[in-house]
Length: 595
Image (cartoon, rainbow, N blue to C red):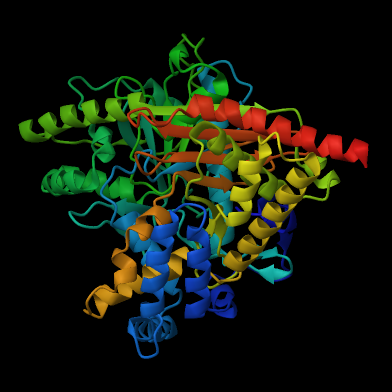
């Protein structure tokens, strides 16, 4: 996501290459991510600090930067070390970012790291409808897997340039394995004995289902319906322990008990079956009405399952892909078995776990900690129906940058100060590219938000400041997706100092660094083209997370924050954001009518 790449090549508007998708060959054709020029990064870093630090702090940081950039100094040495590393790795930013921002993080995966999409509400009213919908989704996943395996998935393009497709190879048959200090990712899809099964979670129990016939063809929707009905009709295990809830623990704690759990051979076999499976299908029970409207309820269902008393244990949060289906509230009857289209379908295999008393105690602790997470998360959905991207484009403005300025204006109206904010950017123009960080707050955006409610400012001046802020944001976006990055470069240089075992340069111990990169606003535009709700959770206690998407006539926001951070109020910020968008529309309309 990021900028108007959504209109020129992201999801919905991707062009298709006239060549097949070749995991290795497609990657080889892409350029390596360059290491940006050191001085340019440092100058842009100082500019990013201007709206969020005090004048004396900026002077101190500027002096430290001058020391860092001296000829033959630390900056030059670290830059050369990083450039050497870049010559020996596919993507120096991906390697560093994946490790430090995700695998090394010790917070739970649930909410803090995992994200998702909620599909538009499906039209089914009973358990059979849920089963058939789930079966169609899984067969679609298998069709997608076939294209990956046969290398027939077309390469995606943006602005006529190919995008890296490597992540598609890693989405299926993969899992995150907990470690005491850092996690690891395992990928089974390309192994000599590639998995042929999915895992199904139902009533917090786990089953494996073979999804390929003996001739190697994927099973049909009807065949899968039969298997899912068998699972739904299976008796609930007595004295069942909620093993899946363990995956909601902090990663260091889960690593300890993961090792204990898999010491038992049957447990090890069950865990391996889950980890190796193509994906996990979660057949959930209905969520309580306390979660409110269906959009918000669906997002919370996907994000954390509602807590231990609902569906949070009907998950294995370490899995890379989980598909979730919720039972309709009105469902009461036991589903009637469909006639099997193939008489000799193998029965789904239930996975068994042997739970010792100490692990049982940890399960209880995990239930409590999961419930605290579910209770602490405040998430809201705003469908802003007053206008969409067409109105903004009619005024020759970038829809994405326009919304970024609205978010910053809303924040400023509440807190009367600017904050560090970023927007996620796609780095897939480069080999093994993942996500980059667009620094959203700028001196131009600060000038705009500070002037907007100033009665001494004329509308023409406000509009001019808005246009300048949008222009700066678009420039920053283009720099980021073209590899001229700030955040990743600065942090990689800091990490290089650790690797090279040199005294940490003062620029990296400067308090301004924390102020620059401890973001209060984490934002992402995601194009879906299908009416999906895209969402993520705040990864730090003080963070607001915003995901948003456009249609021609509306904008949908999913905003979240932690209630335990008393400074945050996501309801107020969402309401203020709506007001900011309407006020910005009025500014445009007034200037148009007076022109």
